[in-house]
Amino acid sequence: MAQITNKTDKQFPEDILFEVVSRLPAKSVGRFTTVSKSWYAFIRSPAFIASHLNRSIARNVDGDSSLYLLYASNILDDHKTCMILCDNMVSFDEVYDVELPMDFESKTCRLVGSCNGLVCLTDNHCAFNGRIIYVWNPLLRKFKSIIGTCCCNRLYEKFSEVSVGFWYDGAKSDYKLIRIMHFEKVDFAGCDKEQYHVEVYSLNTGYWRKIDDAKLPGIIKCSYQPAFINGALIWRAGYSLESEIDTDFILSFDTRSELFQRMEFPDFQEYHSTQEVPCLVVYKGCLAFFVAPDCGSIGSDVWSIWVMKEFGVVESWVKEYSEETPEKALWPLGFTKNNDILIDTSHGGIIAFNFETKQTRILPICGDNNFWINYTESLVFLEEKNELLKNRSSLKGHRTGITDENASG
Image 1: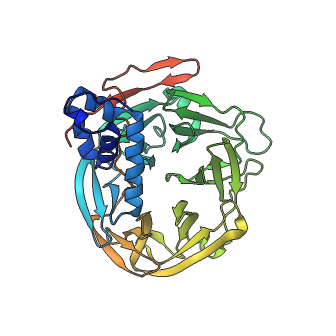
Image 2: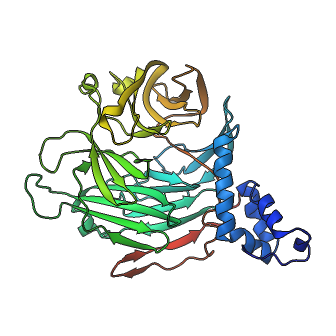
Image 3: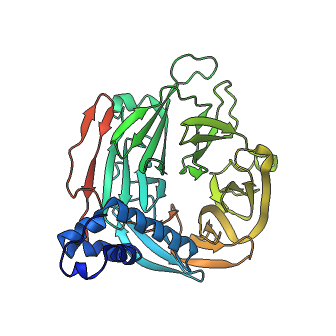
């Protein structure tokens, strides 16, 4: 724990001060760094940041309200505003706006994932996806630009699909990324050449590391952010490498063992002719997905939730609900902490619908290309130096810099 040495500070025992300040909102605590050099060091210490984050997460889970980050559209143009909304179980109130501080070549962005108050984004266009990955703390206006390996145009054109995942490694107190790159021309049947490139990035070390013995059983084909459950990143995939038949299945990456595993979807053939298998999500702590018998461009007013009750056990798939929504829904966007499903409707609005209570709430924003994340304000990145570090490279990969955005808020 950093020492607090000012005379006025000594009036309070340091452990009591630690307990009190770590319970305050992140936005307020961030301002206290200007009180004195000792407070600056105290609040920026890893021990304090970790303690404050744990309390914020617990308060977000157990409290009466929960924060969410809404980015109004993944089509940026000149409008790059995100909104922090507070869900008080009755309505959604806007807390504040924050501008995206980074630029994307295609003017569109893709949400990779989020954890501990950090949001991971990359370019949404297939030509730029994964070339540069941003890890951003919206509260602190800080972000890191992470440059991928093999990112020159000539090399990158060899990859037809690039998928990115983001997670927190609690055992090593490290934030990590994975990039999975499939080669453009893949001979699925009996090809001995390398068909994909898998690498992991550590924010602690600042380097990419290739997984040489990665065994990937298929091609990731879903552009949505992967689900994260039981320490595994989950994607929808297809094209088994033993066959050219395109059969949808679930691809998981165990972030601890760094092994890939194939899992099967349940038998829901009644939906196959009208809708592709949607993105996978975490619902009530279980792997799940939503389907509609007839969605199309006008949406569907009947949606089903399939839930894998025991992770990794195909036989545990259960159709949990099959309910009529109050409006025709185009796509589920996310979930509230009391398991309301946020739905993009065919009328251009967004509603929160609960399958158990059948209650509906209308959100004060419009739909169209939105993405949502559950968001907890945190001080992660506050311990970083407030300077731009030049990118370095080595034989192991690329080291990246941190950008400190000094916007007020």
